[in-house]
Image 1 (cartoon, chains in turn purple, yellow):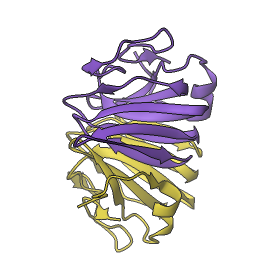
Image 2: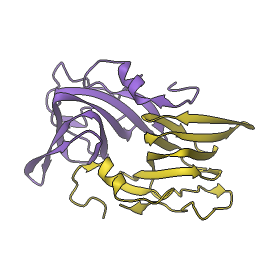
Image 3: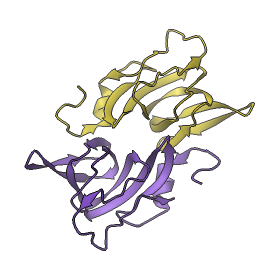
Image 4: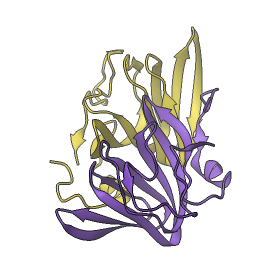
Length: 132
Length: 132
């Protein structure tokens, strides 16, 4: 069980407890949602969550998210301390040339690679999140 | 509509855009959840959300949350960068002697004073969140 004693969790300590990239850790839960932490660097894959929005908060570094909307492609840039929500049904591909640390909110069971996705390379963990 | 163009929002800029204490602003939405920002100082009131957990992330300062659990009272201390979830049905009272800035995640429509609460003093805004 996650955080069984229900004490505050310091995100810095939580981030220091793992190294794996593109492999989110579940830091706590809110109703049927996960709060996940991820370390990322390089490119994720194009994927889509058909039935849920996905919330990103950049805790360190810079994250880019490429988006395919209405037949066009654009990229948003999230600096440290920025938030962004990828709407459900929107194909997207996160990347971070220099690396970033993220907090995500999404329904429990949401797969990192979504419901439809490009081939999953070795450096991407297809997971619903790991325990801290 | 909130963030109609769907661009990233910098939390520092969002926090700089209002001064009111204990009066959360909705910075974005994730499915049927709000992401809210709040500035706080002094004491909130004892209250309870019967049907939802409530997520706190401290962006600046220090937050204390008094909790009544199984007939006992305890207080958790959230330093900057810490997260905590108040479980549904748990009476709680946030406070911050020196002031704090918070990010909250909770279902749209959740009242700041919950479903049962002490008398609401003038310094506490009973709201489901304001637009930024």
